[in-house]
Length: 449
Image (cartoon, rainbow, N blue to C red; front, side, top):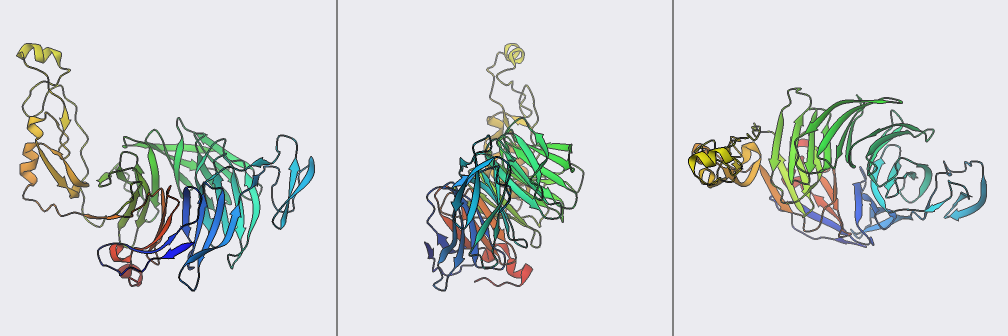
């Protein structure tokens, strides 16, 4: 089921500890079990599996649950609603069948998952919009169905559980965020967006929710018991938002998107400060900020793993300026018909210098350079004057880049142990020792394996 990778630890890269195989379709979520050598996975193959490490060093499933049915008429174990006309046995439990609008339907692929370790509760979102709750035994050998929440009308994209509020908060491709009461199973509120809601973060103290969507916008909401209010919207990405990470200590929000970039939003500073990070060559799928070491770990769909040093003074990337002519040589751009006619010259294509943001022509921006202090880890276009001003500066990289060697659609970390788990459409789950690259040994006392 799972192979143990015998690899010598190296100080310069993550160490692959184990590789778990066995899913029949894409693995949509994988979570490390705190203080245990275990992983919980949810997959498009309609299974939830709990993998525990055996004495042999391999991971084997202690729980293999196939989500054969979902029904809104089943509210919790042993509890019935009116109108049932049959029984269906699934394992060691009975489900009530209904012929009405709440009849049992074949389940959909698992699309999202949240796990709360202290209460041993798992929430699994599905492609049909339902969120199903389970309880796992302390020895991780048994999982009982608790409740189904009719949270969405389309694919669930993210789930967060708040034990204090007893809310399960979720986003979906029905363009909404919903929050439901886990005691009663009732819907408390919904808020709709103009496009698919793709990712979610939540501040448990203030009940603020951050929702990213496919339009490239992030919405900050204040959730109440039966209502919500829009606080602000954040716009900066040129592609759909794929992932978010909220650090409640420093009050920083990180977003990754299909434009291959990451933006850090300084929410606590209240000055609109943003930092751009560009180093990935594909869609940024997952983020994790390590507050103790002030490092950001990011993964992209091409298997790229990046570790960004956020404990340095960084500069904000400038806003791109607009002009009808080059702001260096004043030659007209191709849409500036009047100046082209007056000067009897052909119009030029507009470019932008990544350092100063000025609109320039190709001749005036022939140089390329990395500029890590502004987040540009690879060669980008700069105007000739900016290139001359930075060519003698220290442009040492402020991030390290590593190859996961598999498609990554989801990542999570156990920061205390310096472990990371990745999964993706290649049906493989990989467990990594990240202590050689994230400095967890300095922050928590754990030494690299």
